[in-house]
Image 1: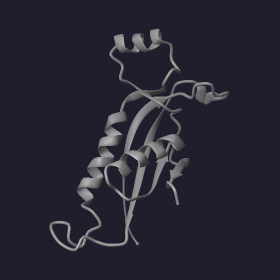
Image 2 (image 1 turned 30 degrees about the vertical axis):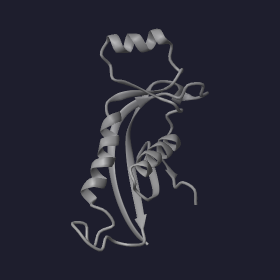
Image 3 (image 1 turned 45 degrees about the horizontal axis):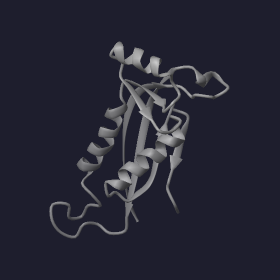
Image 4 (image 1 turned 60 degrees about the vertical axis):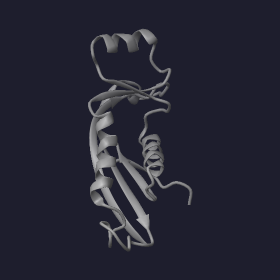
Length: 141
């Protein structure tokens, strides 16, 4: 089995709605996304001969995911009052609503699903919330 791995990072804020602990408050992270793809066979012909895939394409796709969330407040759908969302928007803050609690675990699954949908055979996705703490999603085994 061949594996390729790339990573990209983004800075954003989030909070955990309904959580009984300090993470219920808005706080920020430098998130790091690590993506590992896999394959048994290398390309036999063409521009990607001898490659699993072009690293440039993989890096771009992961970087695009990171850039989408960079310097934003990420919040779970229905976790903020509409008036709060409107106030953030009125101040031109960049806010992104997601349909899940914005945890490292859920982000790992989210990025896995997106990249799988782009045709990559994903081995696993690791999302670091801090340099010491991460979550890994490897899909159905």
